[in-house]
Amino acid sequence: MQNQQYVTITHYKEREFYFLNYAIQTSDGFIMKDIEQFHESEKENFIERIRELQKLYPKNQTISLSLMANQVVKDTEDPNKASARIFKENYVLQDKMDVGNIPVTLYFSPFAVLYEEYKDKLDDKLTLLIGYFDRKLFIMFATAEKIDQSWIIGTRGLSEKQIADRVYKSMKAYYKISYKFADQVEMLVNDDSPKLLKVLREELSMNIMPTQKTIHALLHHMGADQSRFGSSYIKSFLSSAQPTDGLSLADKTTADDSLNDLRLNHQPEGAEELSESDSFLDKLTGKKKKPSDTKKTTGLFAFLPLLVVLAMGGYFTTEKSAIQTKIALIEAQTLAQNNNELLSMTSKDVFAAMGKSAELNKAIISNENVELKGIVWGIEPLRNSLNNLYSNGEFIIKPLENFMTEFSFKSKV
Amino acid sequence: MLENLKNTSLFSKILSLLAVALFALWVVPSMLSYYEQVNDYQANVEEIKQSVAKYGLENNTKQFNMAKFKQNSELLFDQVEVKSVADNKYRVTINVKKEDIKKFHAFLEKISLQYYVKVLGPLEFNSKEKALEVKMTLLTL
Image 1 (cartoon, rainbow over the protein chains, first blue to last red):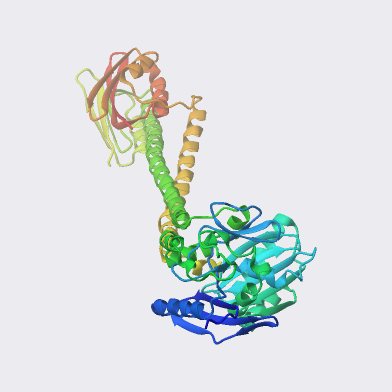
Image 2 (cartoon, one colour):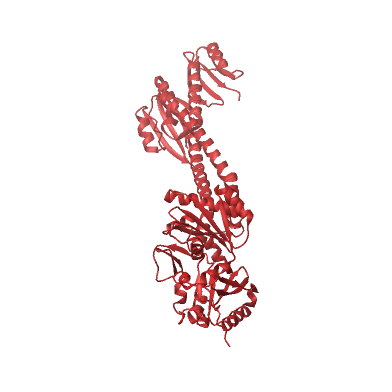
């Protein structure tokens, strides 16, 4: 005899473990059973256990949570993407579903869960809703009417202080575009994290009263009532596996589309991490960087200082080489000018020394020494003049046959 | 900033370190050396400018051209001969009237401000009746 109780089966994957739970739904709420844990290497056992529960409780919903980092909240639905409606005007969009061959009938975004948890508290004041699941912060600024802005912050490897700092920076960035600060902050966590709460309170200088609920409890709550999940589960996933009776969904959920999704959508672990680290501005502007783009940009930026340094070094080396050529020329010119002026002065001195006492026949004049030969009329004045110019020079006179006197002078080097 | 550094990949860190090392060991010395040489150059230019101003010339030193040099020198002296000897050397022979020796000295003082040349070796004077034959070797710079 089949068990006709309405049961919600919930599961999700965190790190390398699958967590499975089911709850009996009653008019007074749900009664949770023990949580079962499977390592990812035991995936077949995990799936088998879900099927077992589905057979045991034909009236069931099998519910999971999308913890993908590429979800985004928009004002319009995109027919090419998986979407779930939350609020009147907001849709959570993600490229495709990625549940593989694991049975699922309802698939929720953490944004939908956040909305469901706090929708009664929302009013005209701006509220910052934070959900902390699987080391990701799902954040949205919301009023009772709509979500103004949302984004996801990866926190893997960050300290509590760094996480709080990112939340604060996000608030500041939001203020820059909307000139509004959140009036209150609500935080939904599935693990108790008093340290994170403490630093968040310090960083934001706001009182935060966290709500601690397990993901299973949140999903059981979501699946408890059709009016609750009717519009907020992610639709495209069910488009090929819509239940016929609204509740008994069972194995159709492992339809071909799901398998296709697995093949088409599977992203390597690193790729998801890159998505998590997309900048807030990209989120604000709606631009979604592809991982390859991010890598390329990072690579380019890493090269930028080196390129600048190489350009500067190249510029100064080239300029230095050019100015060295100019310096060599102008220094040679300066040297030549000084040499010529000195040579001219030496020559002037020699001619002045000749005066009216002698006449040059031949002279070799340089800046180092002089050699003179000529006719002298006033021997002593000439000798004195030349000795004044070149002390200890060799002055020789030689009488000529025509009663004239020849002189020669050689300076000592 | 320290946090940013921590979050940077190893590749980026290596590139950044390389950039810093090149900047410190190559760019900065090149830059300092360049500016030092610019100062040297400016000092030399200033010295040449002063000489040019002293002789009332235009600051327009030209590359040596044998024909042009001969043509210009003949405006000053009766006879000028220029012969290329080798390796950018030119043998110049000028006939100067004995009473115009001052003109030759003035010419000698200006020659390197008008052409990129230097007088290589001594001046050789030979008396030729009422003139002096002066021979000198010019080396282009």
